[in-house]
Length: 135
Image (tube, rainbow, N blue to C red; front, side, top):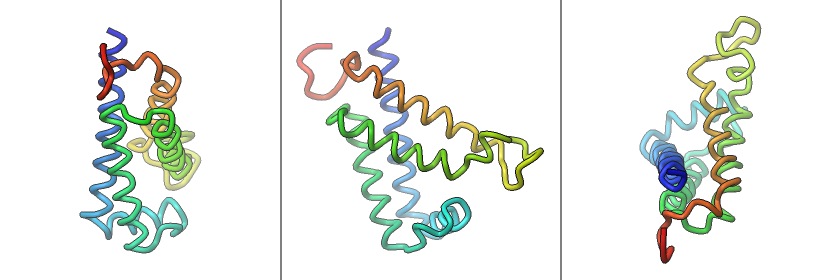
């Protein structure tokens, strides 16, 4: 059961990275708006956003396949950690009772980050990966 659970967690997080990456390529204006609103315009260039999108898609594919986990999981935590920092108000005050600009829909960013920590912590027990001789 543990191996299947880690597989599901890994595939779902990897697919999330793929979806986010595709979104940066297909909906560039959306990405620019997100960058402006949540990250103080730090990524306010279509070219930079597209490069991040391609990198994020590659990271997602590597994670889905379970390759290079010792490198991929810290990168996953960096991406999801930056996202978590960008929406910190929504984690602390999801309903916006005290912090303006909060949104309960962004609270799962904390859960996604925590899921990445679980993958990293149990990577040696994640046996259902490409290239592994036995499950």
